[in-house]
Amino acid sequence: MKNCWTLPMGYTDVSGKRHCELVMNPLTGFEEEILSSQQFPGAVQVTEVLIRCVKSIGEIDKIDASIIRALTVGDRQYCLMVLRQLTFGDRVQATLPCPWPSCGKGVDIDFNLSSIPLTACDSALHFCVSLPCLVEYSVVTASDQTNTVVEFRLPNGGDQEALCAIDDDSETQLMLHLLSRCIKHFGDVTAPSVEWLRSVPAALLMSLEQEMEARASHLALTMDVNCPECKRDFVAPFELQDFFFSELKVGIDVLFREVHYLAFHYHWSERDILSMTRDRRRRYIETLANEIETLNEKAGH
Image (cartoon, rainbow, N blue to C red; front, side):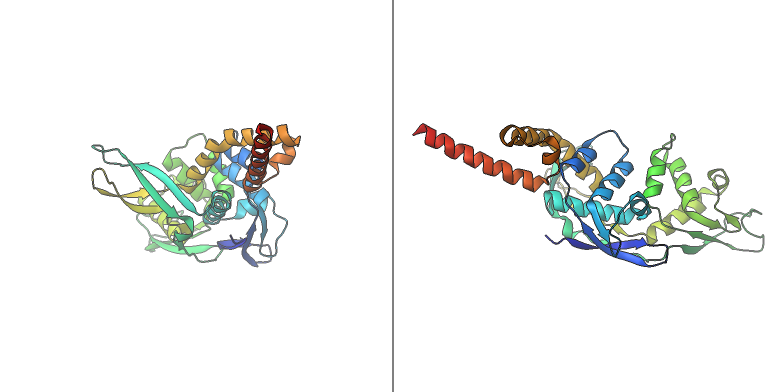
């Protein structure tokens, strides 16, 4: 498998240079533990793991939290997809429930991550859109204007982490907090607060949210599925992050058994074993199992 990829958006440094070439290291046992734990919110886990696994982005080879948090949501999702490929391979096999109430049977899905289409995006740091002014408000636009100009940036990892810390997790509140972080100018208002945005008509905010979504890169993680039981067609969303994390949670007990097995036979430390990738651990275990089998056969004769 290749070890270099291209981020959809990339990282823009302080000089304005854009860095897109991504080099990643595979997960080790340490990252598997982080992603399978319940200690941190999902966005914080992703940041911590990407700090460890992203080797370089373009000419930047010293990756810290500020760089990973500055990556757009689409770029972070892309990094997770790469990590999943490096950890479990390109192929995904899963079972989804049929959404029809009269059915509910499991439907098997089987696809390759490399076949998922990636929606391209503009590389601009800020975007300006002109939205129809649905109501007059003196703080936004003059009464003779028909449109409101909004300047914004795309949501990033820092925004995701901030939303995880909000007590009120209703969809409306999360949207208001996200917009307040991403909007640079709303008409004549600079960096509007959550309280100010509450006065804006919901339809206008939804239009703005759609404009932001249209400019962001994303993996098309939906698929057309036919239920073999009820013969109905449906569109199934596929949450890559949740699926990847669930794979790792299922495998955490296996990880502990691998550590025990290798430590017992080779007398290696836990730290040494956890520093290995999954493939490397499995190769040692396979070699050791073959050696033990050979010794047992010789002892039997």
